[in-house]
Length: 63
Image (cartoon, rainbow, N blue to C red; front, side, top):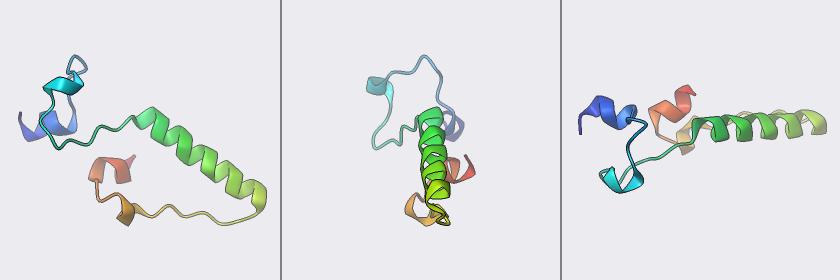
């Protein structure tokens, strides 16, 4: 598998076909969770700053 395929897997790929270890990220779900957390923090009047260092996965940080 090429580095490009690792970052942008073919939609026909199955979990069984992935080389492991592999990060499998559901980007829409991740973004919904971030927005939900931000809305909760806004409602509480608290500043929220996600920490990219906890991920160390460039595609996650860029999303």
